[in-house]
Length: 109
Length: 118
Image (cartoon, rainbow over all chains, first blue to last red; front, top):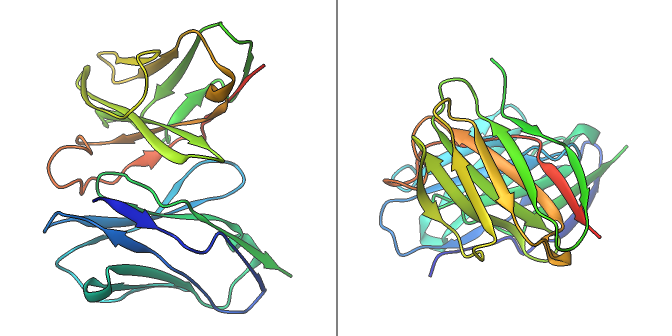
């Protein structure tokens, strides 16, 4: 089965807190790609990161970091020192553009 | 470089009518995909076009159709609208087909067209 699960429907944090968004996937493919997108209130999905199944190195980009663990089929996303502008819905997706249900993150000042 | 442009941004229709949505991809991108986003079903893939040919199709009824022009612009049409068709319709473009190969091509999304069916 091809499936992406984002168990956290909504998360609310106070500014400057760290927050981790979980993503668990199922795929029958041996080579695959995973994506994270951010959807702010404007509606447009903004590409954040792509990771292929052969690269299990963690990725850091500024306050954003991603932890890919093939053994647990997880691709989690952490925002360090969250800011109000991080408030959005975050989607994890498989290479066939099968999306998770999304996690709505609210960062309060 | 201009992003993906979708028009119109908002649309109100009544049941039974038909609607056409438009998408202009990023310059140089030849693949356009369409998605439907609803609170209940989330983001669902509708279809993908590349070089004026439909490359892949999601699990939607035949009332949903699309086409792509030689300049890569794409239109999506929904006929005989139902209340359940109310949704945000998102268009995404990429240089190569996303649903070919291993799907490594990154898709860039427009802001969407919000369709309300009354």
